[in-house]
Image (tube, rainbow, N blue to C red; front, side):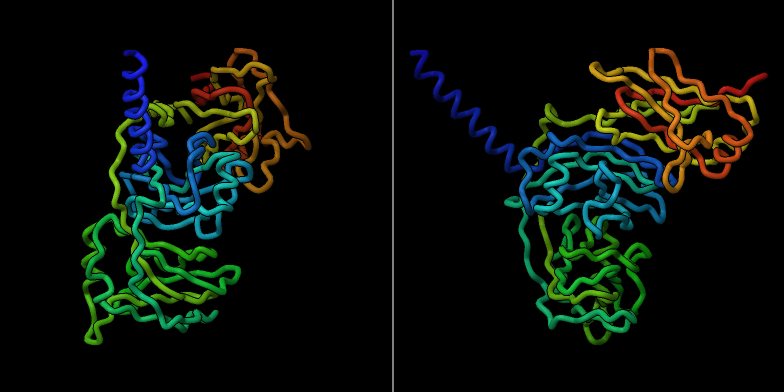
Length: 381
C-alpha cells in the first residue's frame, strides 16, 4: 500500500516543480535603495541563474524613482556592463534585462550587479522565455541611422493599438557601430522622455518598457499623417519593432529567493549602516562620496565595523581614492591592508587623506567579511 501512495505524491511534487519553472519567480527580494552618485549596488548571486536560458527575462520592480534616475546591469568581476545597451539607461518604473548566451556565461559564473542611481529595488524576478509572447508590430522598411542623427523611422499610431501597461517594446537592429545610440520621439519630434534621447544600442537592440498609463497616452497621440512615434539615433539600422507581453503568473514562493540586506536610517555621523558583503573573489566594495566629509578636520577618524568573517582566509580591507585606478587613500604606492581581527578598523585622517576625502570620497574594498557600519568619529566632540 505504501508503494502506491508514494507515486501520487512524487507526481504532485513533479507537477508543482514544473509549474514553478514556468512562472515568474522572485530571485531577489528587497528593499534595496540605490542612492545618488552611482555609489550603491547589489549583486545577485550566481546560483539564482542556475535554470536560466537564453531569451529569459529579468524584471526589476522599483519605487521611489527620482527624476533622471538611471539603471545599470554590470559584471561584478570588473563592473563593466554585461552588454553595451545595459551600461546606463533611464528608468521611470520597472525595467528588464533579456538574457543572451554571452550574458548568461557571465552571470552564471559571477552573478549580476544592479546599480545606477536614485531608485529603490523592491524585487527582481526571472521569467522563462516560454512565458513571454512577442508580436511584431513594425516590419520596416529598415532605416539606417546616420552619424549626423538626420535619419528616422515613422511609426503609425495603429501599431500600438494592442499595447498595454506591463508590455515592453523591443527595437531589433543590425549593423550596430561602436557608440550607437537611439532616440524615441513623439509625433512632434520631441523625445518621449529625456532618458530616451541617446539610448545605448547593443547587438540585441534596445527596449522601451511601458510601465505607466501616461506612456500609452503618448503612443495614441498622432499627427495628421497618423504617425505617433519617430525612432532615430545614429550608428545602427532599425529593422523591426515588436511588443513583448508576459502571459504567465507569478510564483509567490520566496523560499529560494535571495534577500537584500536590511536597510537602516543613517544616524548623524554614520556613512553606512547595513550589510555589505566583501566576498572571497574581491568583487565587493563600498563607495562613499565626498559630501559627508566636508565638515571633517585632521585627527578625525573613519571607523569600520564588521562581522561574519569567513573561515579559510585572512579577512582584510583597504581604503582607496574614489576615482580613476583606486590608488590608496594614504598616497602609498601599494595598497595598505588592514587585517580584520575582530576589532573595529580605525583610519585617522591627516591633511593628505582629508583632501582626497573632501574632493573624491573613498572606496572601502577587501574580502572575507561583511561591513555593518561605517561612521566618522570627531575627536574632541
